[in-house]
Image (cartoon, rainbow, N blue to C red):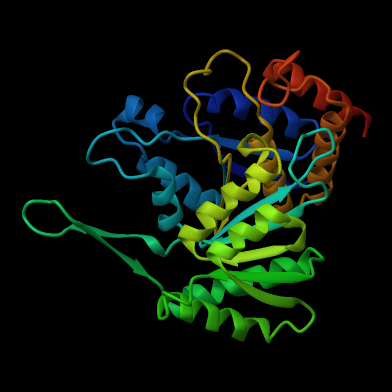
Length: 341
């Protein structure tokens, strides 16, 4: 009898509920059994209970250990922290995994690009240590926290991911020439971990040169491991080189829990119009299925996405300007291929 999984579903704000419904429809066609535990976060949660991240949502993630999340909007105004950051810190989701690849049929700057950014997800300049300097509040200060245990685990995660997925090289990205203590410790740690993986090639790049090299030719890279701020920037850069955020998947992984999410915004301007592209969340769900041990189902969905893109069959407006399809029509194109697989 097929194993059943319990997964928290946070539909999200704006277009979130639409792309979440589309994603669940696609997953259902694989035959994987999932019990969806629906919970709120973001603006939808503020409207419902006055809290962008309700305790019952956190408790559900704590119980199920797996969540699939649509895009969230952090409410404007004091007192509301970023829901995304809060969830990562609450469950110590220390590794952010951002694959970036070119798809046949989708315009990209470099064909055959296939890489992944592994971003440290809990420390650095996003540690939350920020305050005003002086009574006039005309200066502010932020403290980036870097700890050796966190750097060791993210570097090890990158090498383990490379080994498990048949990738051949890990590149550490840093600014150790200027930030000699914090980034120096990161580079030193990466080199120490690299020595424990002789089957995986290792090199490093300074962040500004890395941006240059990615734009020149991203095909020279395989797995990129870096700190929180640099990873935030590089993951969007690599998405931009390979088709945009609308088709970019993301996973936030910790020792006991994992949250898989669309990385784009909630797009309130097109919410309810039925024209949003659900691919980012669908491919994030594929990462979730991999994590659950349902690799065959994930592979079938990716193959259906690849075939639909290659045929340019019923693509949404962000990918097809002449004859754009609706969200439902795009899902129909995927479904027709999944049913044949």
